[in-house]
Length: 341
Image (cartoon, rainbow, N blue to C red):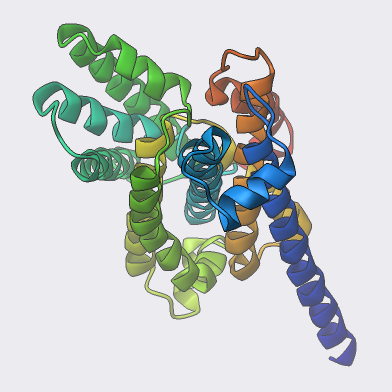
């Protein structure tokens, strides 16, 4: 028993150290996001804009009103998408589960398109609420369809239902956008981007997404048991219906907030949880915070690359994450991940 306790303590210290390192890397990444852009800004100017703000200085205004909210917003979006992916993978025991692949992102985008079509003057808060409704309805439909057969919900059925419903929902979004001439707005959500991130958007993002993040932390232990299988979790006295309901709420809160701000940014919820599980193990007490931190780092770095690849023009950040995510997805589908389905 003594050797086991020592091993657990070492693992705990290693996981904690990894999270601390991740936070340091995240702070550096956000700083780089503020410094680099169409025009690079010296770090001294960044420091002065924060602690000695001069409203007459154009660089200070750019930093305070454009680059800071963009950097912070990208961090929150990446964190929320990564945690949503971790929850879905743990809940379904499906290594391919993520908000984008399971259709949740498309559902949130449909809610936004409907709001833009029928209520074009809607506030950002109402748009966020519409994204929540779209994401929530999509999650419920995917789970209901995947659970129709006698054998119940399986990872394969859930993946198939997610792809089918996601494609259907995306088609509806395209039809509505064409009819109401919302192609430009829809193209933003499909491509994904953070160029229009403002402080009010960041505030809404933090308020709504943080609720989902809090739920995720509360159900972390339950997700660890659920990832072992429904029968095992039930045998240990867990109410799986309550756990899954809370997980669904967390997923659509996190995804709705992220999509409202950045559009349909894919693959973060697929990539990060796998990397994190490799680093910290299978305990969701560590997977949730580590996913949040490294998801934030990934999107902040991707957003920096999106500004620098074709400067002074911006590349959609969704394209950057897809370049990383598609090979990873193929590896999971054909390698060790596919064998688990």
